[in-house]
Image 1 (cartoon, rainbow, N blue to C red):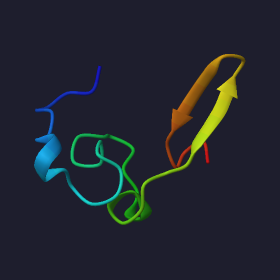
Image 2 (cartoon, rainbow, N blue to C red; image 1 turned 30 degrees about the vertical axis):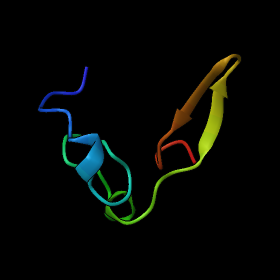
Image 3 (cartoon, rainbow, N blue to C red; image 1 turned 90 degrees about the vertical axis):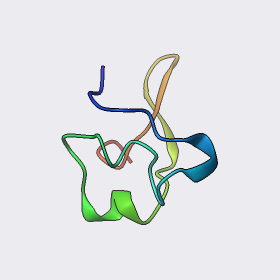
Image 4 (cartoon, rainbow, N blue to C red; image 1 turned 45 degrees about the horizontal axis):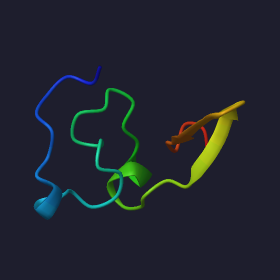
Length: 51
């Protein structure tokens, strides 16, 4: 699990909603929502690490 407090969905941060709590956050994460990509059969992720 990702540590920290889940952001308010009505006041989500710009970019990826996990960026304030993610240990792998990159600058692009704070600006743009990552695309949804298949990372394994029947498993998708929206993360710039896998985009």
